Image (cartoon, rainbow, N blue to C red; front, side, top):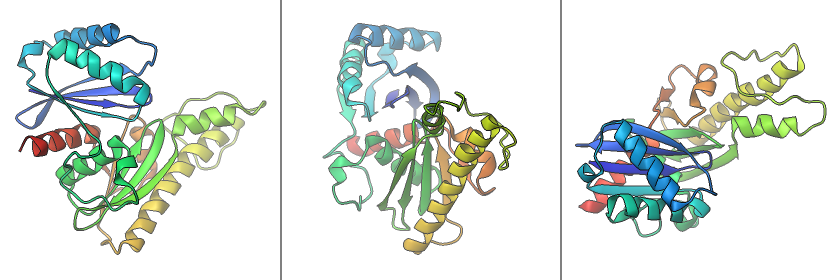
Length: 256
């Protein structure tokens, strides 16, 4: 069984794969002040809750965009499982070309998202990850990652508006009219509807810039994806665990 770990700014998502299929998922809040022992204990307890004995795990793959937590998680995993860890970064085989100025500085999550998209929706694809930040990347018809953009995430934008003295603190809600009738609804309209328009517009620009076909998949993942989905094109594909699938694909490639 493969343990795939995606360390994000808000949450650490863990997937357990059996014969290439995602069998279980776990989620831990990302907390820089937790110790190695605390992370190891949390992982052990969550695995036990799923009825999984650590000894059945025979591989680990890790992607992290939080350097301050990466070492703690890595040490916790080694303490819990005593296995080598494949960490996504420079020198790791991805299975596709990366056409950016410096591939070494590309976030491990974006690399995993591209790998996951090639498995789940194929190439070409526009991949949107709605998390602490919203990322949009483009994979061309040959499967090459051509670049993308990073935007403030939905909740981050709402929090930023709250820093203004007269604007309330809000969380994203399911139904958002584009025409707000009060301050709270105006904020949600600007952030959530605005984000959907930005994502759709960027996807269309990428299609034109890269001469991608009109039917190019728009794949959306991330913890806040469901907040955005109602306002994206109906053809949008929701892949909740895209990053984990990408980590599994990268692990298998590097084992070969």
